[in-house]
Image 1 (cartoon, rainbow over the protein chains, first blue to last red):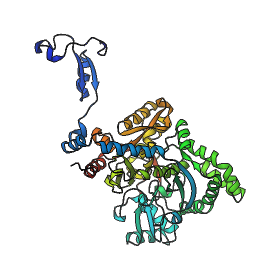
Image 2 (cartoon, rainbow over the protein chains, first blue to last red; image 1 turned 90 degrees about the vertical axis):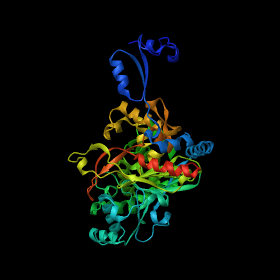
Image 3 (cartoon, each protein chain N blue to C red; image 1 turned 135 degrees about the horizontal axis):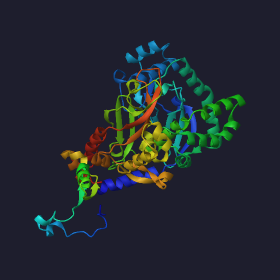
Image 4 (cartoon, rainbow over the protein chains, first blue to last red; image 1 turned 90 degrees about the horizontal axis):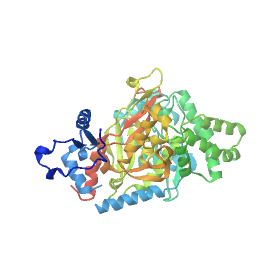
Length: 71
Length: 416
């Protein structure tokens, strides 16, 4: 597996035609559900997984309070 | 919000500035004015007799007999159930107590003074392991030990502490962390350091050599002797942090065997309560989770100041004892607590994390945002009164306490 932190990065996705996005080797930053990263890695893709959950586990009222309270 | 950031900086400043010193041992009734006739203080947030768990009721019955307010345990239970006694949380009166946390007027309490702020906090003396009142024990053996603590050990300790001018605790904690204690389920190093510090003064203060020998033997044989000192210290450190407008720092976490409660600086003395959880841990031979009572005690004050489960990285030996996994796992428990705290202590560091400071000042915003809740190392009591400790484990603070607290806290700063 190639090292995704040291290989030269491709141009931003917005600059790449969609049909060419998956034409070459795929390098992925996966955020949230770890299973996606596990599956990609199992298929030989270079993946960096970022543990993340929505603030307050998605509770809209608490998330709105947190947005105002900061921290 | 700038108000919150400034308030939390002040909270952290007060925690860091604390100078806790064990200064005395006094009868609880002398230092806690509320402890009059037929008044009992208990662990955790407020609770009435009808909702109390078995060990709490057992300890109360024993304490009523100990004080001479009931002739036997059956009469004591009838008295308590009929409303003939008054209950209040230790935390409402400058005190803390382990497990059931029962405190009555003639019980001796350790007195810790925070010399930076002039406040004092109190905790009963640790009774040792096995069948003891803090785990609901209440038979003749338990009461005889309480009488010995009151009549023999307390006077020697008090005289020694006064002769020495007190025992400064910040340094004891710092050294204890480096020696493998986390001050909740492992206190063997700090207990040993305390004996070493106090022994000369105790020798000078003791009325007779046999009383000195008995005192030193009791402390030396009780690895958890320092726990109650650490608890009074935690209370003495956190009380000056209460009532800072705009601060989202947790000032107390406590359980009564039925409910888990937290207090937050900006919301003062208000409790935010949710059902307490069952510890996950290791059981003594012959016992299992089927015997266990849900978690209880004011001892979570040590986690509130960054010790106990928060300092698991310092105490790899305790990780196995409480069923928390390997030494490597112990590091991860502590690392997770960095995500919900504001700072790393400058004074209390852990060698295994390259001398990083313990996670200090729990921020309710971080807890609710991440969903990561405080981890607590705890003893496990049998659910029936009179049996005592059956294991040790890890328990999580209920997230709902923090959600409630966040809503109330937001209102104090005009956010809805």
